[in-house]
Amino acid sequence: MLRRVEREIHWGPLNDALPALRDEVLSYPGVPEQWREGEFQAPMSPLMNFIFREDEVELRFFYTWTTFGTRNDITLEELKIDSRFPADEETERR
Image 1 (cartoon, rainbow, N blue to C red):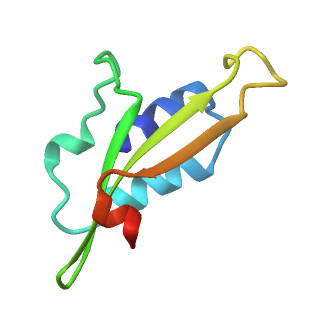
Image 2: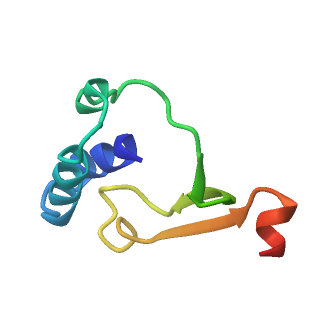
């Protein structure tokens, strides 16, 4: 998720909310040091897996981003669709 935020910061440097989000996440205790070093050259997967746990309950999702246009297309540069899907039957049932 941080790699995606870093890339979005570079694509739209006038967005003040994204650097604030990145800085907040990096300020949490236990954040690995390597997360502070952006890897901008490595390809990113279009999917991200999320696992939410509370007590004995575990919900698994996969998350996708769909982006239309490019950073040079003013009408489309901020149009994105974020989609979340259950990754297993138990999550879907809940």
